[in-house]
Image (tube, rainbow, N blue to C red; front, side, top):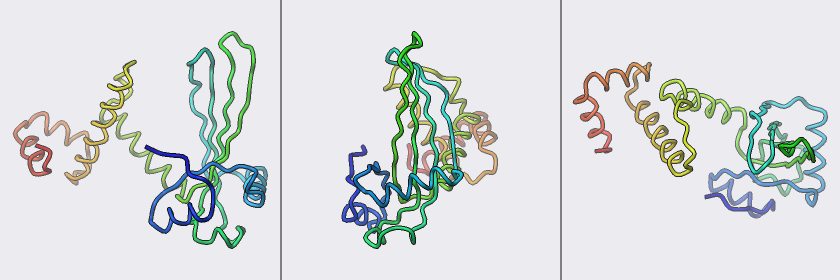
Length: 193
């Protein structure tokens, strides 16, 4: 579970030097960094941008847009030199009540030490595999516990299928379905059973 981490050189430098990953909120109290990132978001085109489908809940509609920008470490104060800052993330939320009233817009800013573009494509590939190979979108449930369990099982399945080193995960699933004993043998070898 993630917990709030303050954006201070002492904290995030320690996380980065310990090979950890952080995503920390950026506020105006970090004047130089805040100004640098806002200017970058106004002048530069994002490396990655995504707008999620409109979500309905809590009596309102909400749309989120994510924009990621690279950070040039040479443009930062010397106190951030061990922080590994690589990505500035801008999250824009537009909310409207279901009856069409009270439209609000909120923008939040975050700093991270991971390469957003590389991580994005890794996540996109995993989402594609979960949806196409394991038909994730076909199973919808209103129970949050069941959703988390199914998500964990899909992730486990994908990671196990990667160990088979077969080029086609869907074909490997079909092979396991046709040859149940092969599946049991594989699961035993992987120390799952």
